[in-house]
Amino acid sequence: MLAFLRHNHDQFVYLLLFFTVDIVLLWVIIYLKLTRLVTLFNNKNCNTTLNSDAAECPR
Image (tube, rainbow, N blue to C red; front, side):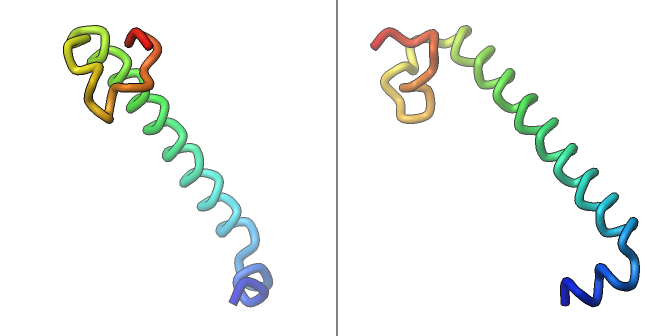
């Protein structure tokens, strides 16, 4: 399957991969920034599993 794709439309597949990875990375970064903001606003939730390893939470 991979050989078939590589033979037929090399550039297209690599472009598609590149853009997909880019978009995923962008969303991950946005998500991390948002969760950091959320943990700053409600430090009361530090005992929950979601925010337990955030930098703002006291160990």
